[in-house]
Length: 179
Length: 177
Image (cartoon, rainbow over all chains, first blue to last red; front, side, top):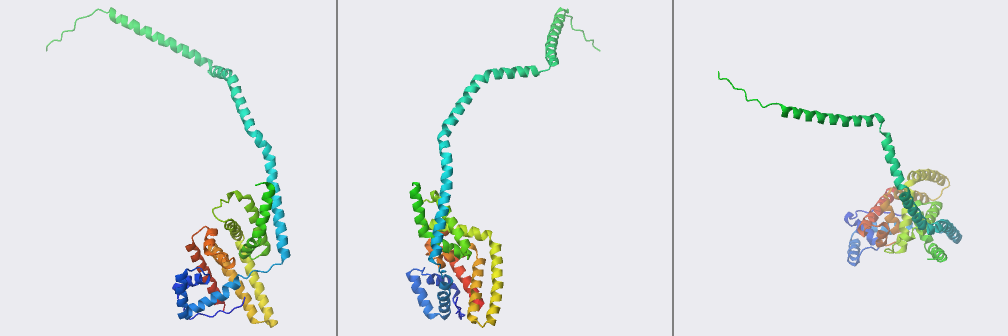
């Protein structure tokens, strides 16, 4: 890279962006005219633009590569793409026949599961019910019978108490003596 | 697209874009082997993601974005290594300069070498977006409107990135004198 930068005396900082865009040809007509007019009068901005015109193209000089490089590059890339495509197609070929049977297989499995549960559903429930009853300890079942007995006894007792009340003679209210 | 047609289509794409893809990658990596690998990866990625190309932008804009993103990911991953490599290149450069003094080679050439290293270092230290905008506009010659599409941003933002990048590079070169 050839070095030939000159330090600009003073450049207009406010116009720096416009000068960069002017260099790249990215300003519209009126702005281009404005910058050209300014540069013709301003030595600092002229220096700045000169630097850009000298340096920036040198940074972008493409490296010359021989045709053999590009031939190899092309061959390698196409080979990589072909192997990538084969790999992808291999997977697709593997999955494609399965995909054809996937929906019918799932459908059949679902129907079979529903049918199985409908056939075997009721005995299962009975079995479960039986199991829960069996799980209750024997003593507790007896206790619950006794509870019923005691409840009945309580009721009989209260009935006899009522009868006793009814059988008792009605006595007059006691006189309260005046003191 | 039938398989044979798809293959032919990609062969044409490779022929048409291989040079651009390689040069973009080379601008970012400054290493021809890495650039080759990255640009070839970009073709493979384009091949497997072709369905994602919605046609709203032109194919090359979409493809350049793939290349640039791959390069940025790569430089992000290898950032430290790249710096180390640059440092060692600098050391080698110093040795070379010393040798050139003894061999009475033109001073200007040595200074130019130093300048190039400084430019490389400045580019490396630049924020990714500034560097991308600069490389795509200055090295690849894409207009700002296209750079904005590749970077998925506005033209105004690209102008700012470009200006900052050029200002930084110029500053580095002025300091070099």
